[in-house]
Amino acid sequence: MQTRVRVGIVGANGYSGLELARLLLAHPGADLTYVAASKDAAGALEDEQPFLRGTNNLQVTAYHPDACADACDFVFVALPSGSSGAIALDLRERGLRAIDLSGDLRLPAGEYERWYGRAALPEAGLDEAVYGLTEWRRSEIAQANLIANPGCYATAAELALLPLTASHGDILLPSAPVIIDAKSGVSGAGRKATQSGLLGELAENFYAYKVGRHQHTPEIERQLSGTGDIRVLLNTQLLPTVRGIYISAYVQTRDGVSTAELSSLYQFYYDREPFIRVLPAGRVPELKHVRGSNYCDIGFAVDERTGVVQVFSVIDNLQKGAAGQAVQNFNVMNGFAETDGLLAQPLYP
Ligand SMILES: NC(=O)c1ccc[n+]([C@@H]2O[C@H](COP(=O)([O-])OP(=O)(O)OC[C@H]3O[C@@H](n4cnc5c(N)ncnc54)[C@H](OP(=O)(O)O)[C@@H]3O)[C@@H](O)[C@H]2O)c1
Image (tube, rainbow, N blue to C red; front, side):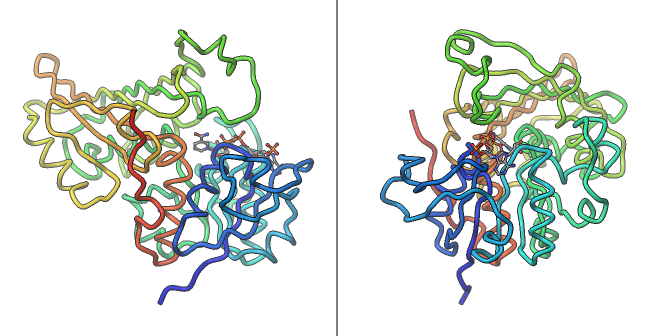
């Protein structure tokens, strides 16, 4: 019988950390034994986060590595990039297994420094971290002790496009850039207070941000490229919603690709995947159909006039884009059923 695992969350007062707490408190194989936030945090988790009232007796404490290593065997680190990866690596050295939700361990040093604008972590740590896109890296994840959980935009884009890329098929023309029009709800920016997050700024508003410089661009390029050289133009925009990522990707394909061909390709890769729902031809996904769940819904259309294939995908950024995928990876790493703790259906309406 599978033994239970003592788990901790560092960054438990942030949006991703809270979603992790919600999932792990209901997980059949996890005992949540440690929750930590920044230095001035202290108090009962249910007082700090009343939506979890009655589910636990945990105290949120200021993060301390010795306390974390004593209390748990497995840790989810959900801090801002620049703090998160170093803590995950330190806990690995102390013998814990770890999943880092930040961008700190996802890229080679040179690319990280260019896109994140700060020094990269040591190569040994970067080398040890396995990229945690569960559906495409399952066997590596099962052997891993350290996971770099993918970015939210990156998850939705890669799940939508990997069946088309050169290393897995011959449909996409690598000479043309893949254009990814991406939109996120405001929880994607985290819980810290900012002027751009005010209701008065968000409501009835819509705009692009980080034009040409979003840090998920190289992450997506690396995963899509395989042995090839695929260029991605990622345009990120802020939706006036709380949760959700919507990707519309435009891909130049070789002549004559048909809807039937695409249908069988996507079915081939995703038919048996519990969290990927490929929609029938002619249907497009909607944010509300995945909200609060670990699903990724994917639809596509062939524009015969231009030869462009449009691929659409949606996820909940805090679930499949962060905490849900992290728990999916935790399940794979520990030999649990991959769906354990993750079968809540979407909230609707
Ligand atoms: N939000 C998303 O949709 C999403 C999706 C995928 C990946 N991610 C990644 O997940 C990570 C967390 O994102 P988030 O959106 O959940 O952020 P967030 O809501 O801003 O929360 C960040 C958390 O980190 C804590 N913290 C910051 N510095 C710390 C330190 N030095 N020591 C201990 N705790 C510290 C904060 O504690 P206090 O509140 O006590 O200050 C807070 O609990 C980021 O790396 C982000 O890129 C987020």
